[in-house]
Image (cartoon, rainbow, N blue to C red):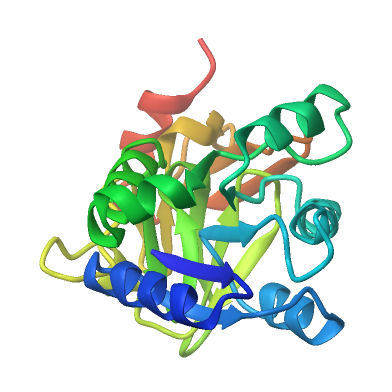
Length: 246
């Protein structure tokens, strides 16, 4: 899990960093202010969880404003607010001015129960609610979002997601179907030598009137766009029987 941490107390911040690392997280960046430079660090790479102190120095809403900017960049951003003032949180959300977080960490509880225990509890709870994913070439890909993966040209993969967009990756296609590989994605099936598909996104299968393979597979994105890919001659009939419209 990749974490970004915003906290102005240097000693407190370093102890939190150590606890996140101890719990198996990668702290991508930890900063002390909500400056433009800090924001650039926050959006420069993929982050699973942003842990933001609400009050920074004399600005009691700095963390909230930082969260709002993150939310404007990415509506699915996962936030955890760090505070010792629960009443301030409740009042802020009552006004609906700032993004609602996944959770918040109480500084008072961290002091009483210990950094490691509180961080471990947060990470365990957060991880349990995340969809299965795989990290390939430093990119996090949600497995259930993948429609198909193809090789457009040698040495490059295109992972097509349910919204129709694709992510280019430099790895071998066989790594995605090998159970012993760290890149294994069990939802994918081999359709031809350059194509792996997720059957959940196939809405139809077509072949010519002569009944010859290969079969053309039809995918529908979440935006309603139809995409087509061909199977190999060898397994064309199998795919046709399984996915053709009845």
